[in-house]
Image (tube, rainbow, N blue to C red; front, side, top):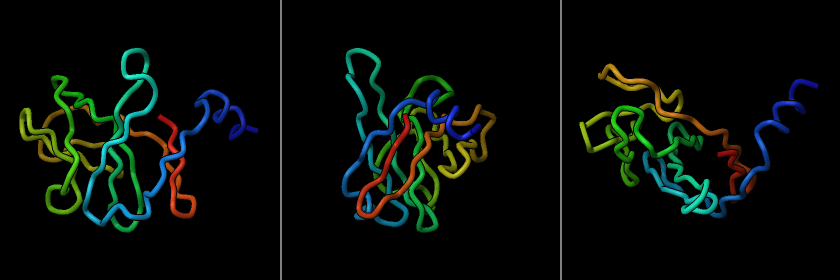
Length: 116
């Protein structure tokens, strides 16, 4: 019952094709929704064989968490102040900063379902 209520509040999932090709230790950005309205950019990261998703908006001062190779193969990176974030938890690593906002993501075959 609680799961159904949470799904209703979360809204519909967005299918992101080809996430099976996301390499270990890599991050790739995905634009979700209308960028001029309520859209957002999400960073998909593969760490430990699993895909995780973070909002690219850095919680520190509004920089953007970058795609590409993850720092030390496991941390998303914001170049504005060299902050690193653990995609599994959203927690800042080695910095006093709020966690990055995580998004729910589930791998389904070659694709992933993303709830931004």
